[in-house]
Image (cartoon, rainbow, N blue to C red; front, side, top):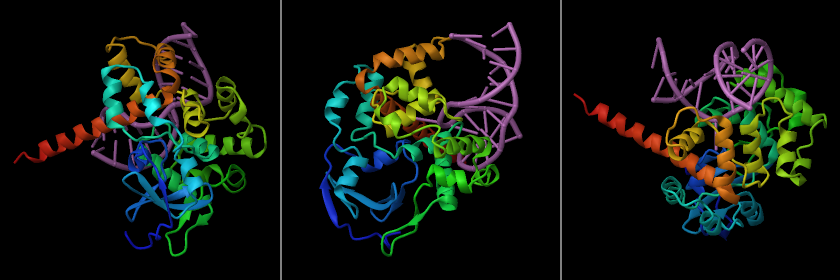
Length: 298
DNA sequence: GGCCAGGTGTGTT
DNA sequence: AACACACATGGC
């Protein structure tokens, strides 16, 4: 485990940041625990990064690290914009230091196309399977083999539905393949959405097979800096219904969308991520508690 | 072994 | 616009 962790060559200040929390919050899926930190890729670059208090140590360029982990986001001010209610306050306290990172758009899009009706752990498995099979191996000297996420053009050329199903994509395989072809063929320009309005960028993403409201919002939030984008999945749906609609029956998806678009403010995407991670962590805690309880029985 | 998972596409009222 | 339903796979 500790073998092959490179001597971190660079340090950079990272106040108001929790690396492990950020990487474990379900916005990115390929980072692996390594040495005292994590190993992964940022685009084509193999990266090792570890946190020691308010400092990050890494073998990569500080500018690359700083941009990817969004260390420039004014996190304290962002959290101040959250609405003042009990659930939000608990999530904010629990997620102190969690940042919305800047992922490469294609790998974010592709990963979330594979995410529907999948648990977080399984999304990570699929990401690694696709990287191993179609991605470029990269590594630092003496380090473990890491794989960059294959570009859309690479999947369009080398993958087919069968090989993607072998990566455990199931029925999502054809969607990823068709989307890769649309982007590789220039029918949809992922770069162009960065300069569009939120609404236009969302509409453009919705043209892609396997991309609905939820996945489009994930891409806008995690790859396009649209910090207001508010993905609503089963977890967030439950949080909203239970905490902001008093568990009332018959609340429609449309009502949830309209409520969340305004109530959580200009950094709604951040609020959403805090609520999401908090809710998932609470369940894990409950499950471990229940497990411990059941194993206490004779 | 049934239930659930960071949903989407399709077809029907 | 709202709803029902199918869709693969793995963890618990």
